Length: 473
Image (cartoon, rainbow, N blue to C red; front, top):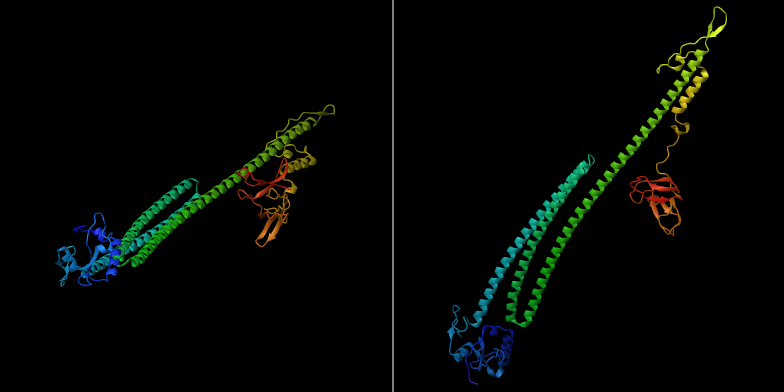
């Protein structure tokens, strides 16, 4: 085949397969020129060129190892190295000789490393400034949260004054929650900015890895693999740090939201308890007022009935006394019954004064006894100072069914290391316990003993608001 002049693209001469092919030829030919035995700036010369073949797809017999001068003479073109003070003849395809080319590439790589190092320091400084800004904003959010808690305490005090202020308290609470959500959105935006900076750092690290990979390709496959592993480890560590920071930020946001929701639920429960106590107090006041009004009506009715009865009796007795009065007669010496006009009784005048001599002591005593019996309370209802006051919470041991459906025992009053409590009589087969004093399972109010059509039972003291009951044995 005739010799043809052909040049290969830079892609072939920078391919890893070309470097391996060149290294093998250098080892076989003894690392020196086959014509002048020079060992500096060696080139691989293709004796022939095949159409469609790549630079490394030739047989060893078709390749000749030549120095730069012999290679230039072979192709018919030579020039001097452009580096200062260097007169080494080189091919027109190169700008510098091999020695100075390596030196210049190392200088460029050092300058590029310095530039990347400065860029990394600048980005790290920006990241520290952003972290300081995030901490400052977090402190501001904490201060605002404290102020919000103070406002909620003020609203809690205002609930006791009037029910209308409760609506305002909820509005202010919702406003504080919205502000907290806005702050959370700001934190999320800051987190996105920080993520962008981290991504930029990752890109810089990738750029450094790319430069390092190029240098490793020139030095050898073994060194290349080690550096690639180091770069992968660096990237993996950066990704791990980034994921850790994201997870910490999410946990902090979740914690803030949970605290806000918990605080809101506590305030709502406190408001419900306050309203419930106020309603109970109002209902008890109404019941006491109604009882007093009914008692006063009964007393007034008894007094009015007694007054009407006494007046009618007094009138009848006055008429009878007037009819039997004796009047002396001057002509016949006999006694004649003369009518005597009845005397009216004034409401303020006692009956004995209206009818002198006509009301006996026995009648007066009967009237006094009738009045005292209608007004005075029964003797057994009066409690002296020496009598003991009954306990508010009576003992229910032995009269309360075990709440467990499968157990038929009763609750017995016991004493433990934490105080008195009610325990099942079937212990240790049943370990059911109830706090002392006995309280409602649903609302926590006191249970009282009641009596219905089916007998005695335990019912909640807040009936009809709570209809919880327990059996009585």
